[in-house]
Image 1 (cartoon, helix red, strand yellow):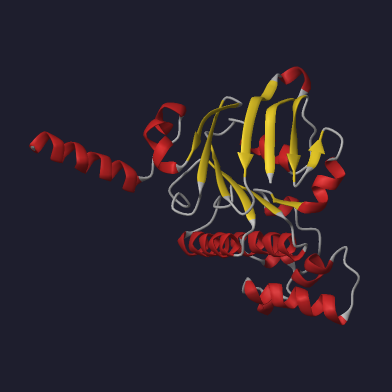
Image 2 (tube, rainbow, N blue to C red):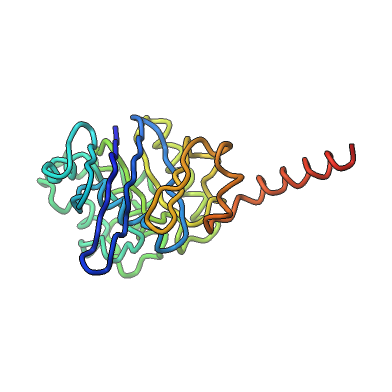
Length: 246
């Protein structure tokens, strides 16, 4: 579904934000894109979304290639940014979910069903500025999924969420995975979604330094500024203690 071949991207004089990244995400898989702040995660997501063109190498999303087919990539990808206020354009939940769509009974009904799925129906006519951070994030997700994308890209989806919000986000991710949607979520913290992802890709200073199933790479993430999940660390500590006791 997503194929990156030696992808490099530079913001001009500031230097390379992404360097020589090669990566594959099969259809229906969930990739966790992880790294410390400034490691290139958001830039890489923007490249996958067709918002930027590689300055070196190439990529394809659903057989649409970049450089050259960014507009076509944008037709099958939806990216939900970290800051919901930058993405919500409508004055109310209703306006935002119906923006850019031909208003008809069918489209309104579909948007209302999506709002209901995200527990937003009671806020249908509320001004977006009155919504909580978590509700705004759900409006962005609902709008993205209304477009029926082949690929959903989530930039720091747990940022600013409280525990109930994190649980809701996890449930949304799990449901998307069950439906066979290809997902890539970036995060600097593994704790909230490590059990949901199929593979991890660890970024460090713009480079892809580790990739593979979580159990294959978690022992090495700490050296790249990423904290392993507490459960993984605890399991390793117990195993070491048992080995010493033997």
